Image (cartoon, rainbow, N blue to C red; front, side, top):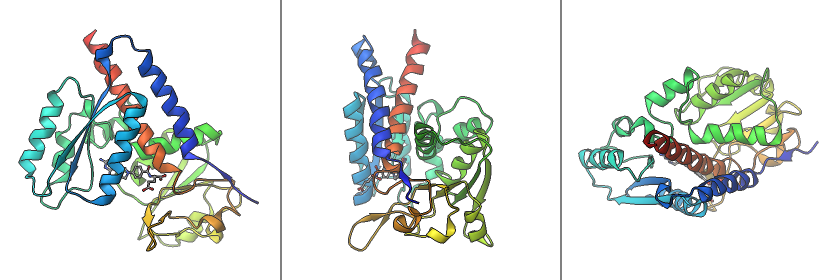
Length: 286
Ligand SMILES: Nc1nc(=O)c2c([nH]1)NC[C@@H]1CN(c3ccc(C(=O)N[C@@H](CCC(=O)O)C(=O)O)cc3)C=[N+]21
């Protein structure tokens, strides 16, 4: 068997076109959705992701503003910048690129972002709202994965979804979103015993552990849907996922590539959330 690829690029292009059309149809030019991206320090990977976000914003007609701060910026200064964006009526979404330097608390920064501008969906208020099934900004990577599954018509209800990894930004919210869609969810992590048997029982397998080519062909049930969230940089600079693509493509029914899979969807859902935020803002103003 040879798996069908789920092209994140293609799904992203289709969603971005819808976002672009919707923004273009707005009559009042002042209502352009605004996104503020804050980048601390000069980590090359972070810089390159941020560039991708800027470019994608521009393409759909979102005004995006980049605030670059030196590694030495104090926590207090950063929190003040976030607060200023909270009060800025032209800005509907605020993203502070993670990771932050050790002297700055991620938690404090995330909790300072107004929940109504938290387009990453990282604020505890949005996480709580997501968990209780209320309207919320959903975290971009898991949300993008749900959109990919829907795009290719993979049904989620009643399926056994197995998630490898329990980060706050991918693994944990991924489980919640799949549960909201009536999957039966198993969370696996570094202390899980007999990991292989869980992987082999997955109808939908989400790999988000940050270990290069960790999921092998033998781990995958024939016909399973496999989503690769990995972003590992090989020695030769090439990007590679958490899934052994060659092996797993012989077993899975659907498989996402790296690059060109989950990554472009993450950026797209950021644009989507920013658009939703701008719409909500203007609805309240009207
Ligand atoms: N507050 C915050 N929000 C984030 O959403 C966030 C963050 N911090 N910190 C870093 C991670 C990482 N991230 C990526 C998004 C898209 C690609 C992406 O588009 N990747 C391309 C390849 C890019 C390449 O070749 O380097 C792809 O998979 O095809 C990658 C990584 C968002 N993050």
